[in-house]
Length: 93
Image 1 (cartoon, one colour):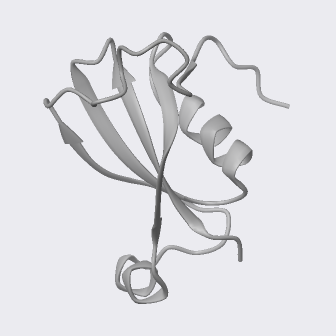
Image 2 (cartoon, one colour; image 1 turned 90 degrees about the vertical axis):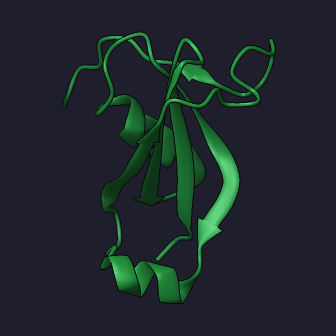
């Protein structure tokens, strides 16, 4: 299994969600974009779950799990070039 990446999703820097995604980094971003409302932005936090944390949460390969929501502003949400990807309508194959 690839690392379990922590992805931050934000709505205009006001509402923040954290997701655990067991996939390659770029795929992790796409997976979260497919689960949040249109217009949200996502970025990799640079943090990963360790094997004990993944086991405690029961995260399996290719799984996406919402960890929680915060009303705190993400420190990189309003910096241009911050690595956030903005979501829009996503077609499924």
